[in-house]
Image (cartoon, rainbow, N blue to C red; front, side):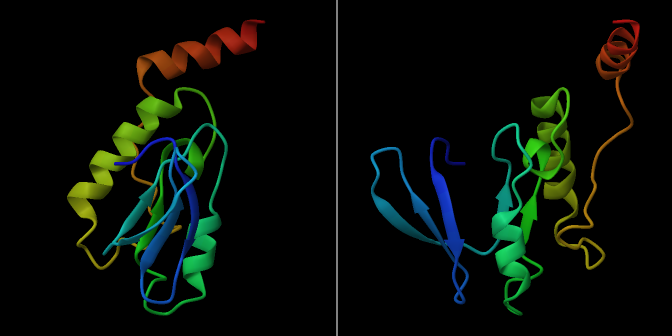
Length: 117
C-alpha cells in the first residue's frame, strides 16, 4: 500500500504510473490495482482502464474513492477485505463490486443524529 502519492495513470501494459511524496515519477509493474484514495469519489484510474481491454477488469476503486460518505475508513477496510477474498471470482467486475456489509450501529447512529439536527 502506498500513501501520499498521486495516481497518474495505468498504461496499456498494466503499469501504474505514480508521483511519490517527493514529486518523483515512478512506474510500478502491477497485476491488479485497488484504489482507496481519500474522502472524495475518484474513479479516474478505473475509467481509464475501462478503455484498455487487458486492464478493464483489473482496476478496482473502494472506500471513499468509490462512494464518499460517512465512515469512509470503515467502509474502505470492509470493502478491501471483501474484495481481497473475492477478487479471483469471475463475477467480480470493476465498477460493479459493491462489497460491503449492511450499515453498522455507528453508521445507523450517525444517520439518526443527522436527521435530528
